[in-house]
Amino acid sequence: MTMSTHALRHRTARQSRLRRDRKIQRLRWCRFGPCGRPVDHLPLRSDRAAFTLAEMIIASAITGLLALVLAGMTMAIQAAWVHTRDVTGTTAAADAALQRIRWMVAQTGVYRDADGLPKVGLRVLSESWGPHEFPEILVVWSGGRDGHLHGGVFADRQPRFDELIVYAPNPEDPGLLCEFAFPEVAGHVDIYDRKFSQQLRRMLVSPQAEAIALCRNVRLCAVRETAMGKKKPYPAVRFELRWTPTDDQLQGVVPGSPEWFALPWAQSVVTADAGLRQGTLAIELQLEPTGQASSPVPERTRAIPFFHSIRYRYVHSMH
Image (cartoon, helix red, strand yellow):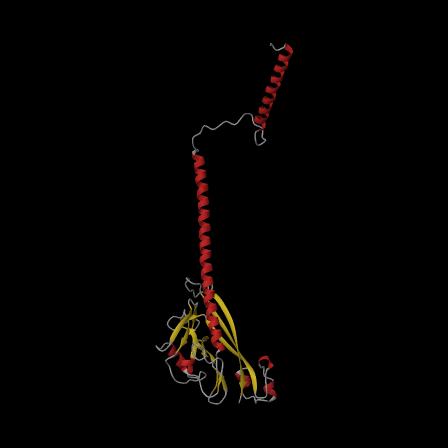
């Protein structure tokens, strides 16, 4: 059966419209492109097999810059980690030493001297260098390393040398803060005697002294004896002990008198024959971070200062 002339014409016209629509759509895509910008022709596939020399140079430069940036970041992270580790270790060592001193001070006993006056077994000794004073030695009468006095009052005897604990820089290595004990040394001693300071300094360098290092890397300060004199390194360790009321305020005051009650007793606790006296021990300690050399120049040092305060109270009685 042959197709009629009218049907053939209709089919031919329909196919022509379809071809025209597809051609229009293809031309629209080619003209505007995938990004919407006009183009004159379809993009052709590149026939190049590799980058050009200029492109290789630019790619190598960018890669090198990225490698340098990553290396710098790695080194900065490593340096920050080392610094944080050193500071954390130094802080932990200082806290442990200060807590040890605090506990030992709390065990300090009280005794009476030859005149019957109460004396606390707690004293700070200084070393002189020219016009300078360095209060770097703390003496504690605690009963030894175990602190068996427990802050008691002993009216019938004086301290024994084997019951003393001393905190001071090591005379042979000033960068070490040590706890000294003398368990093999017998005999009683008055820690407020004028000859005690020299006696103790001789004992610190004797074989009878047992030293335990509490802190390492104590900062060493260069101090001149005079303006043009020679320098001497001193450790940055300082103890300061203040009493309320002071020894001068107590001297000559009669218990029970108006002057006695007017003294600045701790927490205003006072009776006719006794009062609550308070001692405040201030501690300053400067430590270099672990693994770093000590610098005597203040502008160059990286020392970390640590401050601590300890209070000790006892009943000051004249009877």
